[in-house]
Length: 207
Image: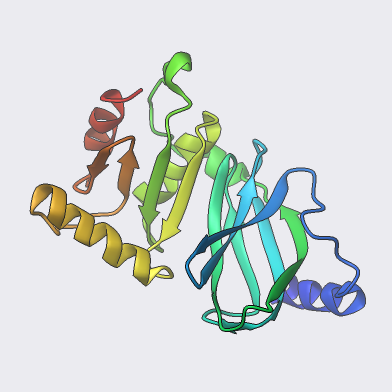
């Protein structure tokens, strides 16, 4: 509650003084698909950040909140929201507050033991996770700690992407079973990673 109040007050004080993409390690990027514009927070550092953005959109029908707060792990990008363009004369800008996150308890937890080949670390990785999933959290931490650039979709928030990955699983494997985390590496999708051992086995195919 105190953190939320702090963000709100700070935003009121400087709402229109934010510069877009003005943080050293966090940037806001847009990806357009027809009329849909997906807004991502991209973290280029080795530190996790909590990112708060205020979206100022003209000529769009918003399909998500205009104020969004999400955790953006190290070396990852996280979709913050989606906008639907309804006018050719459209424009969108962002105000942003970034807060570094401490992980003392997390660092003390039992990490996933896996060693990445340094020559293979640049492979694209997409991770589908959900809330209250310990293996999801540990998987993201593994990628972040080893500087593996990865894109994260939370299926509790990104229903559309979850439906797309299910359709992709059906097309590729005739399989819609989804046990999170679901991981896409290169041209492979792993959707039955119910244990650390199975996760490590999948990673060995690529790293």
